Image 1 (cartoon, rainbow, N blue to C red):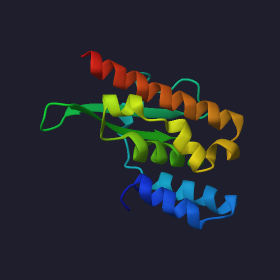
Image 2: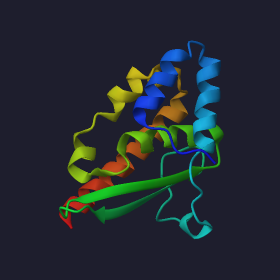
Image 3: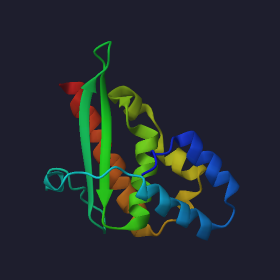
Image 4: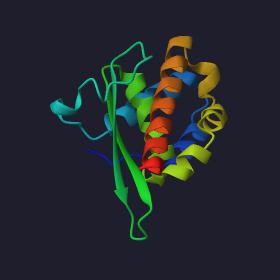
Length: 144
């Protein structure tokens, strides 16, 4: 299994791929790089509401050396392209502090990649639900 791509790698690869069919294939490949989540993590608490396909996001809050809580994300879906979208979302947000997550304009990053205009309304709604879920987890981490 290859390592999950960084946002900079994803940006560079998207720039090289001009055809959206190739970009969709690339998203599917990104989804294949996601580490497996345990069957026990495919539960109601981790399920993301508002997605047409099955999506699970696991947020692990781990303090760094300074005590700042960082949110490490893992996820999975039963849909190939959605798994790719999860991989992009993790590249953007995983490992960041709650404050960084809340300050990040994920919509702008997805627009920069051209995803906003090339996703079906269902996938766009699901993506918004995933982002909202991570933001809620960040807010809870800040309140703890």
